[in-house]
Image 1 (cartoon, each protein chain N blue to C red):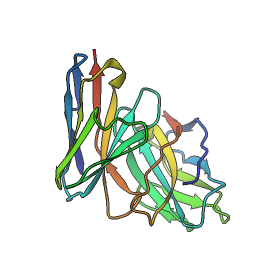
Image 2: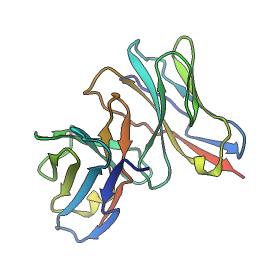
Image 3: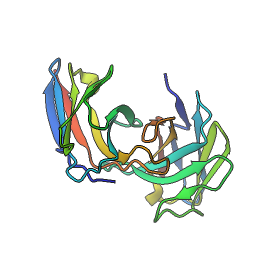
Image 4: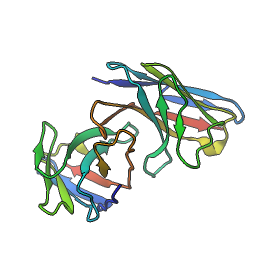
Length: 112
Length: 115
């Protein structure tokens, strides 16, 4: 599975959009981009995933560049409860034996 | 609501004792569950894949005789840390596979402290 690069930390003002970037320049054509987050001392939580089209759900939006070498997770109106470590993971979706490889992620601090 | 539970949420034990951690799938019969370990200020590392009715698959470097995994039913997987030592102190998290590869539902984690 391709490697991802994320900034170690970011700050965001409460109520503003949080844009979390992820670089995955070696991504293969059959690899999806997954986003999870982990609030302190809890298990990770799935947020969203996509292949090449932009995706949106009740939690966030995922914007994937046309060349698929990078993506951005957008939390449209960040709240204090969105403070967490956000992980961008690339994985072959069709493989039932593939595993999630967590990197260091981005620590997002939402400030009042 | 939660779809995966873990018990206990935290445990403190003496060095040399064994500790069992339970992971339950609350809403789905899970043939595959995963066990992760997370040391302080580090990321999650997959330890093993638990398969109902068969032997678990361990990641490289994880001692299968030390971390015993039993997945005897479609809703319960257990991880037993045998002869625990202080270096086994960690946050242990389980997850269950969903119908979508790559999409896992995680439990709340178990904090193990070995004195």
